[in-house]
Every structure is written in structure tokens, then in C-alpha cells.
Length: 166
Image (tube, rainbow, N blue to C red; front, side):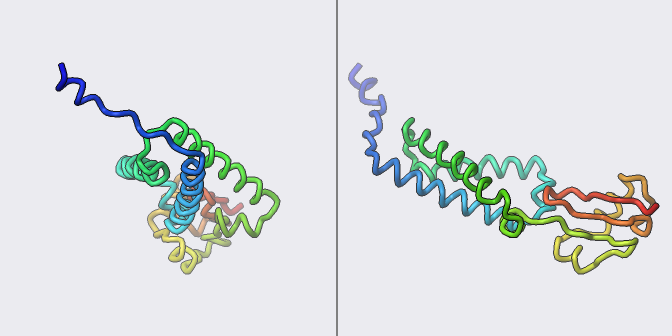
């Protein structure tokens, strides 16, 4: 009986409001780090997540959770960190709304890949789009080749919009 009681884990020590504040600041730092990291990955990579990528995101979320809460399985810390992430996203949306230049720097902007049937190779290289991906987008829109495109645009979400020549 005594051995059974000895194996029961102790409750985590109480956390002070200062500790919760520190965890909230860590959450803001981690959100900023992830935003920069996902921006560096590029539009196309983020739009084509595979099962492997999703598994990595789940692992990342667990690592981030530990970084933000310092492994404290405390309800108050969890609520404070979750609220900080939600409020940070809300503030970021408010700051970006109505500021197109800042939004383009943080979120990105559409990139023209084909103009009047001419493939803009430098832009494709910069956005890490290959000819096969562009050809597939044209075929998906019922076109035989990029020469049939008036416009092909890599959107912020990673999709490629195609406007056929008339």
C-alpha cells in the first residue's frame, strides 16, 4: 500500500502571475519565430503539405507547446499561452489590415509567373516553381501549354491561378 502511494505523482507547484506573464511572452516570441519560418519556406511549399509534413507540424506543435509552457502542465499556463496566441493573431490581423505594404512583407503578395504567354523564368526560380508544376496548372485550367496563358499567378496561398488567352 505504501509503495502504491509513493508512485502517485505530486501536483505541480503553484505558479505565480509573474510565471504566467513569462510564459505569455514566450508564446509571442514563438509565434513570431514560426511566422518568419513559414514565410521563409515560401508560398508553394506551405500549400502542398504531405502526410509527412502534417506529422512534422504535429511534432512541431508539441515542441512549441513545451517551449511556451516550459513543460508546466498547468491549466492557468495553458490558458494564458492559448489566449496569448489567439490575441497575437488578432493583433497581427488588425495591424496588417489597411497596410498593404506591411501585409505584403509579412504575408507575401501574388507573383506573376506568365505574362502574355511568356514564362518569367527569374520569378519562377525565385519562387521555386518548376516547369512541370506550371504546366500542370495550365492543364488543370484546360490549356495545352503556357503559351495559351494570358496570365499565370502564384497566389499567396501557394495555388497557381491561370487566365487563358482570349
